[in-house]
Figure 1 (cartoon, helix red, strand yellow):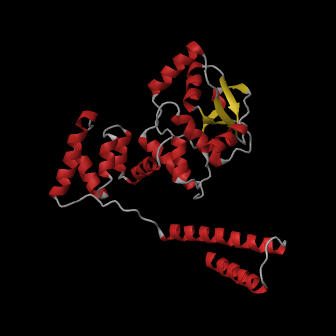
Figure 2 (figure 1 turned 60 degrees about the vertical axis):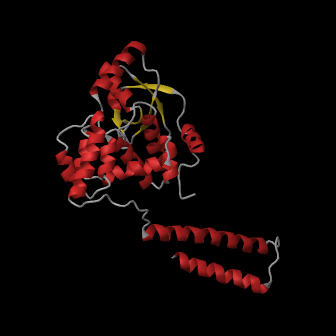
Figure 3 (figure 1 turned 90 degrees about the vertical axis):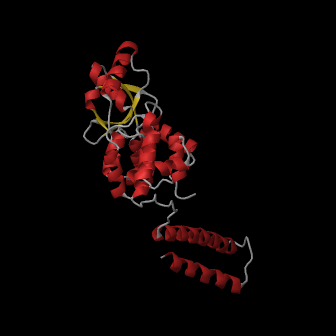
Length: 287
């Protein structure tokens, strides 16, 4: 367990579900604001129009999830596109309202799961959502569960945020395929900017292999090799891991001491003093 706040996911989902009553209310979509955790950086207007047409013909098939803000308005946690579609059609929005004790971490997970289950997120939107989950203290394995992906997939997505801004913009606009962006990540940012300028406009999927070959050949021609992939563990992360391990050991030793005081196990006076010394030493080491 590496501090994952959302593991196991099945139990976490149950915890969230318990904070969202099943009762459905109708609210004015004009009173609903987007969530700061809304993963989508771009909302396709054509997609919203199609959804609005479907809602007008069939009604809203699935309620959105909102929570009440301090100013009395609502924040949509799951169902941003449905909210926009209902605004466009001019109908009341069917919603389930989360209770006030929903945590920020739960709100972010709810937004991530709600969006991944409908229209797929763009790669950079997935990367930013994963980064937000990481920032709130969730582990890579737990984040992978939210996306129903592997830990390796999460790490690859996070690397997209390290790309040069020009490469990120090209990926966001659909000018380069994901595979090209991932290949460019293997080179320094100056090389990324140079290669992206040489690709001459948008690349369709059929030209992906030619683009990859161009990047590799031109980089090799000027003596630039792709970066060697290394697993880097920062000093602070390493120390944090040591502190956690020491904390676990300290807790177990204190438990032995408690059992001794309750006469459930036997320790000699010398052993009891030694346990005291170990606990004090562990406390100093964790500082």
